[in-house]
Length: 156
Image 1: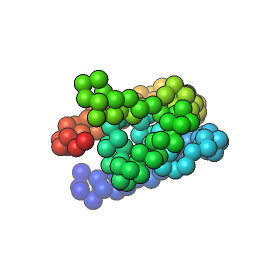
Image 2 (image 1 turned 180 degrees about the horizontal axis):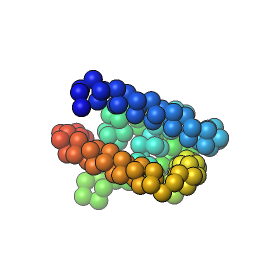
Image 3 (image 1 turned 120 degrees about the vertical axis):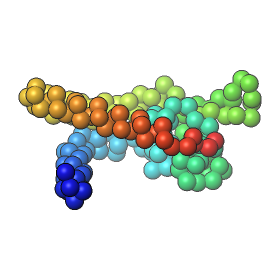
């Protein structure tokens, strides 16, 4: 396959992905609108949902803000019972943030709503095409794992 053909296929796949995302997006806005979180707070909640427990320095770095700003955002989430902060037993200076049960429920409902919409779409596809989708997703995940292995470790 010629490089230009490969690029065209990549662009076409990206366009299809955009269209699919737009098709799935209507399943989430209601839940997003009901969250009553600022955008920085939502970013922290999503970060902790996807990454698990994280140091404050990682939260700040991921948001591209100072440690003081990240601490203020997390403070408000702690006050609302969405995030918990815990010092590590070996080193009390290291504080880990993670979602509380309330935070897990909050983001989990939004995640499940999008997952349910995707499930409805997948269930409407015939088995042979569903197998192709599964193989493609497995290939993408495998590529992602290989790519992550090539990256340097994240700094704390």
